[in-house]
Amino acid sequence: MASADLRQELDCSICLNIYTDPVTLRCGHNFCRVCIDRVLDTQEGSGVYTCPECRAEFQDRPVLEKNRHLCNIAEHVQSIPEEETGIFCTYCVHSPVPALKTCLRCEASLCDIHCKTHNKSAEHVLLDPTTSFEKRKCSVHKEILKYFCSEDAACICVSCCLIGEHRGHQMESLDVASEKKKEELRNVLQKLTTKREETERRVQSLQERRREDQEKAACVTEKVDALFRDIRKWVRVLEKRVLSEISRQEDHISLTVSDLIQQLEIKKDELSRKMRHIEELCNMSDPVTVLQEPETGDFCDTEDRERHDDQVHDVGDLDVGLISRTIHQGLSDIITHINIEFVAQEATDIVLDTNTAANVIYILGDRKTASRSDIDQNRPGTPERFQCPQVISIRSFSSGRHYWEVDVGKSRWWSVGMCYPSIDRRGRQSIIGLNNKSWCMWRYNNQYSVIHDSKWIQLPDNIPCDRVRIYLDYEAGQLSFYSLCDPIRHLHTVTATFTEPLHAVLCVWKGCIKISG
Image 1 (tube, one colour):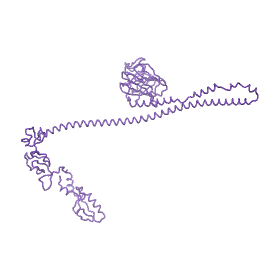
Image 2: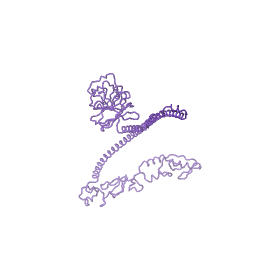
Image 3: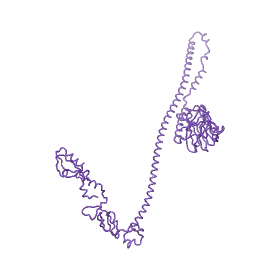
Image 4: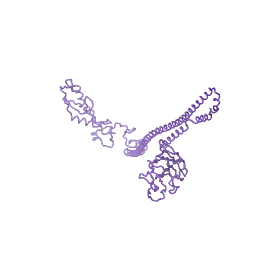
């Protein structure tokens, strides 16, 4: 550590800090280059420059010469860290010199030179510089602490061992006790290190979990945004459909009423004609002419009046019930789609098992597309191969909620659904839907049905159905079919108690169908 006097000699008189890039004026005084430049700048235009220390005058701006020697000294002093203790050698009385050791017996601090000449006997205990002598001596006997009492866990002096209250106790030297304590501390440190590592692992795990949750939240947010965009689109489509139905009914009623009005206008003209004729008869003076006219009852056609009254009554009103059912069904389909999107997992890894494909079924390379072929595929006649034109998936489902989709737009005769792996592979009973081990949606031309165990449930004709979604809730025992029109349309849900894993199954009578995803 540099002495205070030395540091004071290295202080710039302008900034009062140790020199930075010191320079010298012709008068011999030194300053930081930046400091003296700033002073000289303020003296520009005054006609004379002066030294801030001695007021020596210079007609021209003085040339600043770097003081290399002083620069080296300042850099060296700045590189030496100041002692935090501020303890100096007791015997260096002329200038403070940092203490290297402290002697407890002498209660004196020693610099490097005085340490070399100090008493080396055991009584003179040297340790790091300190001024806390009381902590190093026995509070009772005022002697240096040399031992450690294991029973009382206290540092003691020699007198404590011989005549004090620790006489006869188990004791050790401070070094030995210190090493034991250090060993205990190392063990504690090891345990703490292990706990810290475990804590770090948990922190990393939680951070990873947080990242996963953030990614999941971002994914769900994106999905929700897309879903609400679709909902708004579906609601607009439903609104157009309902308004179109209202307009259709209004046009039908209006047309019917217009026809009735036209008929009644004709009838009104006829009645007016009869009324004019009767008025003419009433004004005639010839009784023969009056009496030769038809009976008065012929002029009144009560049945015709009643018939027109019935027609007016039969015009009817807007079918509000149909409009309400259309709205409810449309909203129900939208809600069903939302539920599927969020409670079910889309099965995108469904591929077809060529070992089960009939030889009239051609499987494309992606193993997601099946087409009816007139060319025999000449596959081995294994027990698991179907004879009818169908194929099942490799993957099966034995729990959870899942859905998968099929593009059926290139076929007008097909069946899609799910079946047990124990389904027959030969004979009519192997066709999906015609047994108690499979469930399917069937189409032939524009006719649709849901079939299980040869029981047919007729669906509406002319469904806009180029894509079909199959939704499975295994635990609930539900298998649902949807038409992915715009908006999605729920077609039918079958309920069963599933006893085996379920495989996706395709039956292609004409054309080709493809599993999406």
